[in-house]
Structure formats: structure tokens, C-alpha cells
Image 1: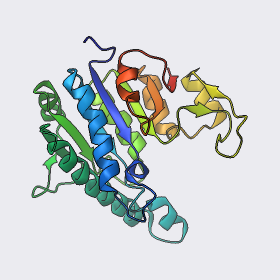
Image 2: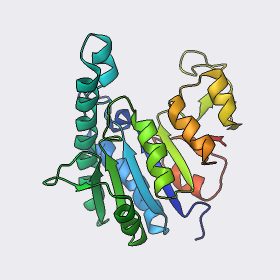
Image 3: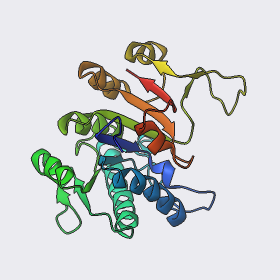
Length: 236
């Protein structure tokens, strides 16, 4: 099957690995997400993942309570690596070859992120999981996702969330909220919408890289997007 985007980068929040149970990582939820990636992998899509760490540690929250910003961000980077290992394990149980690549040197656990090596893994049909953010404090995993997508020449960033797109107000608090099917980068920046941080949006705008925001909890959504169906919200 010919799909719309042959190479993608999926930005997965740490919160996506949570369930109702009081655990930082829910194995059943991780397995369910891995199953979504297996579907598109079987259809020939080259997949890079960038994962957040908010289910384990939110650096910004601790910074706001007095922790040094650099230390807080470094702890957040380590949380993304824990999530990356969990996702790698789930994917490899499905016989998908993966490579965990980190922006922080951690040779016993993962490869260092090297652009050319990452592209070669993709060409060999391996899923790459990019953890550790950018490796530098003061940058979010959203910015890391935009940066990695541009570096590996992905055709789209797919932002996997718990909601089915971008709304003009919080749909949980207001059932009359309206969903956007399409927005421009400037719409997002002017309205201050929290799709991704401003640095990430600006990087995507400068490089004409579309962003699709969708709900990964709904089975089959990822494959539908790659077939060209109107799922979620596209920012371009």
C-alpha cells in the first residue's frame, strides 16, 4: 500500500504511556502504542520517535519550585531515556528491530545520536527512538522533535496526544469547543496555542515541515493519517 508520508517523525509525550493505574509507565498502554507503530511499519513507513518524560519527571515544575533549571532539565532528559527503553522493549517483542539513540552519551544503554547513522537505520527499516531531548538544557522535547525531523528529512511531524486535534478552547472543560481541521504556523504562534513550544513551531515553519496533531489512544488513527484521511489537525 502506498502511503502519503514515507518517512515520519512521531512526537510521543511521556503522558501517553500512562493509564489510570498509579504507575509512571503502564505496560499495557506501551504495548498498545507499539501495536500502532507495528501497523505502519508493516506498510513500509520509515519511523523515528521522539519521546518525552513528563510521566516520570517534569523539569519545569521543579524549576518553578526553586530547583536549578539546568539540573531540572537534565533530570527530565534522563526520564525520556527510561521511557525510550520501555518503548524499545515493547517494539522488539513484536519482532521489530529498533535502535535507541540518545543525545547524552550512555553507551551501555543506547547509541549516541549521529544523524547519518540515524538515517542509515531508517533506510534499513529499523525504528529509531530518539531520547535525551537535544542533550542541552532550556530546550524541550518538542524542539528536539522538530530538530530531529528536519535532520533526518522526515516528511511530517505527527504529534501523538490524548485529544483528537486542536481546539479553540479546552474540550474537556467546554463541550462546545470547536476543533480545527487545519491551521497555519502563524495561527498557532499568534494564538499562543500549546501544540508545541514556539521554538519548535518556528523551526517547522522555517523548514515547511507540516505537523499533524491526533489522538493516539484511538486505534488505527496513525494508519488512517498515513493513508491521507482527515484525522486530527494539520498545521502547515
